[in-house]
Image 1 (spheres, rainbow, N blue to C red):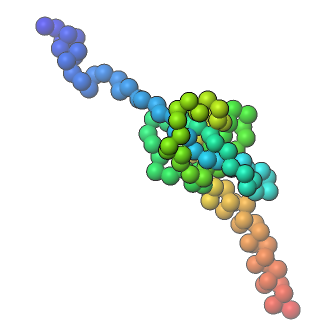
Image 2: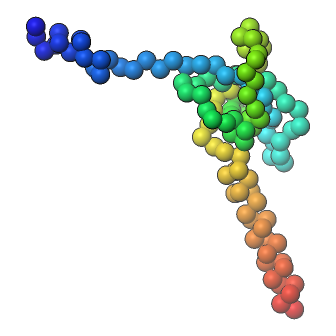
Image 3: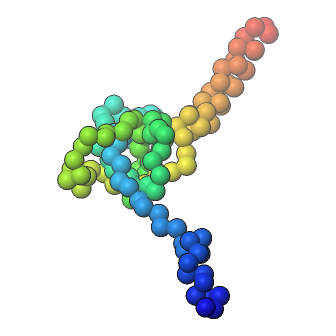
Length: 118
C-alpha cells in the first residue's frame, strides 16, 4: 500500500463533521431605552448547546437585537418554523449595560463631589 492509501485508515485525517442543532428559546426585543416585557419564541442554530441563554444577545436577519430569557425544551419540532430565526452573538447584556451605565455613574459622582465641596 502507498502512503495515500494508508491515510484513509487514519481517523485524524478526516475533517470533523459538525452537527448543528436547532434550539428554541424565549427572547425579549431590545430597544434604545431598554427591553420590552413581551416574550417571543425564537430558534437559533448552534453546533454545541450553550450553558445558558439568559442575558445573551441574539440578532435576526434585519439586525434587530434580542435578549435571551430561557430555553424551551418541550416544544415540538413542527412549531420551529413559526418562530423568529436568530443568530447568536458573542455579546452579553451585562457588558452592554456596563458601557451605558458608566457615564451616568461618573456624572452622579461628579455632582455629588461638587455638592459636598461647597
